[in-house]
Image 1: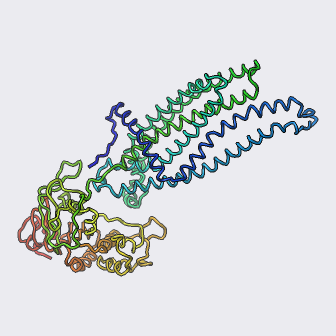
Image 2 (image 1 turned 90 degrees about the horizontal axis):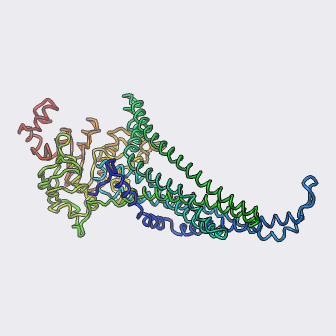
Image 3 (image 1 turned 60 degrees about the vertical axis):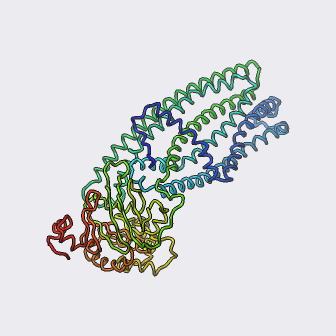
Length: 628
């Protein structure tokens, strides 16, 4: 079983640093993922970024010609008379500047148009890549072992993968694009500034080093903080869900729990908010210090250039070029390091996504699986099975032996924690036993393809899903491989005793159930359970597994359904997991479990005559000694 790291506070700073730096190799994988999802739009976007990166340098390069040309024109008398006299402009003198002015206008217009195109491409890439990531997360969620869903730490990892990284690859793409664009702009600006002195680009780089330190330092701190509070953030989400979900609405009102959970949520959010705001305050102060240092460096360079202008070494156009180039370069460097920091933070969080996507199921098909029988000829057997759930020291089953012949209806009784539901999980091959074997017709389940095996089973779980879909869809979900068959759906509904429920609904089988969507109809717990039974019966499987099939039914509904079930189970293996004696007495044989073992077996009357645990529980529950 793959284990999920929790990133607890016991890890040393060195270990945390190593874990953070260890995420950097995810960059190539992330870019490959983006390329597969984005297709040709990615290459078009890169082309737009390259042009956008070179445009500022082209624009700045035109400034000396335009500024010096305008100074010469004004000095040459292009404007006749003063402002008071409404002096006329001699436009003919501006003709030599026309090409430069036109080129400048075209560059400005082209930059604006490219910005619009880039915005559209970012939207396309964001939607495409984001949906692709969601599909990958959903695919992994459906493929990994059921065991993962019984590990609390797995939910922390899923939380980070789903809520923090859903848009991270898109953010990485934008950050990488920003690096490309700003990098090209800076290279071009360096080429523009070099003629004025090699020390200028070096001074520019020096001015931005404090910003680089702020970015790297606070990025690592932010990552460590986010990693460490994933369980607290999930707890806050849980409190929020309790207060806003229909599952908790009744008890919150009955027991007056609203204020209690609001207080818990508020205290937890206050701690998280305080930590985040304190972090943001310290980061902003560090950024202010870095900015002041950069402004001092920029001011010194400008004073030096101004002195050269006053000495006549450079022209006014050169000064305008220098100011614009230096300003754009410094802003570009800050943007570059900001993109670099965000990119680094994204890579750190992408480690959570890839760690989630790399989870591998352990319950898999063998290289050469044996065929799964379409009908059971001999039966099901548990032989010497011992099993403990992951991270549990308690054995759910210990040297467990049980044989269920073909065509037999079996009831499994026992107290909570006796191991009853574990039998269903092993039969569905959600888990493999630690020792011993589970077989169908003598074939170990580990020699079968799990997916094909599950197609031979139909199961009603203890807490069936209430799908917010139509009645017809709720039943048809039991076997999506069957073609649409309204008659088969109606038959399954009748077998489960759900046909009366459907008959009372306004739109019959077309009624939308649940309250998630408009015009949905809510059912009672027993009605949902009978609908889930119909879904289970819609799959014509040779093995029927029912975990507390009548727990939400009233006595009348239970009696009606049990009267139908014998005919339904004819020729198939049916296994009840139940606490109800009224359900158990319908079985051909009853097995009583305690402490992960079978402690007695027999028919209802045999067990009463034996006077063991079953008879004692029967007398305590019914107050009589005889059978029904």
